Length: 245
Image (cartoon, rainbow, N blue to C red):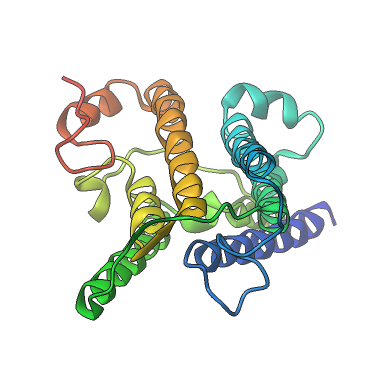
C-alpha cells in the first residue's frame, strides 16, 4: 500500500512539475494566449515592482538550490519518505514557479527589438533549441529519476536504486551542464528584450552560475577523481569554457 501511495504522489508531483516547466517556456516567450507572462501581470510603481520581482526570483533560487543539497535532504527525509523526496522537490519548484507567475510585476521598457523577419525567426529558433536541450539533457541522464518518478516506481516494485554511475552521454561530452546551457539560451534568445525579460533572464542566470558551484561540489563528492578529470576536459555551460585545469 505504501508503494502505491508513493507512486501516486510521484505521478502527481511529476505532472505539476511538467506543467510548471511548460508554462515557464510560454511565460518567458511572452505568449499572448497566457493569462500572465513576463510582460503581462500585476501593476505597481517601479520600485515596488522591482522589489517583488527580485524577491520572487530569489525565492525560486533559494528553494531550488537548498532543497537539492545533501545536507537538506538528510534532514528532509526524516519528515518525507525517501521515495518521494525528489517528487516533493519538484512539487515545491512548481509551487514557487506558480507564485512567480501569479505575482510577477512587469516593469516595461525596451532593451532591444529586432525587426528583420529572418533574424527574428533565427532568434526564435535558438530559443526553441535551448528549451529542447533542457528536455533532451534531462532524458540523457534519466529524466524520470530527475523528476522523481523512478523513485516512486522502485518503491512500488520494492526494488533499490543502483549506485550512481558517472556517464557522458551525447551533450555531456561538450558541456558539463547542458540543462543550464539550454536554460540560458531559452532565457536570453528573444527578438524583443523588455525590461521585465531582462530582469528575469539576469536573475535566473545569477542563480544558474551560483547554483552551479554548489552542484559541482556535490558531484565531486559523489564521483571523486572521475568528475575532477571531467572538469579538466569539458567546459561548464559553453564548450571549452570553464574547464578547471
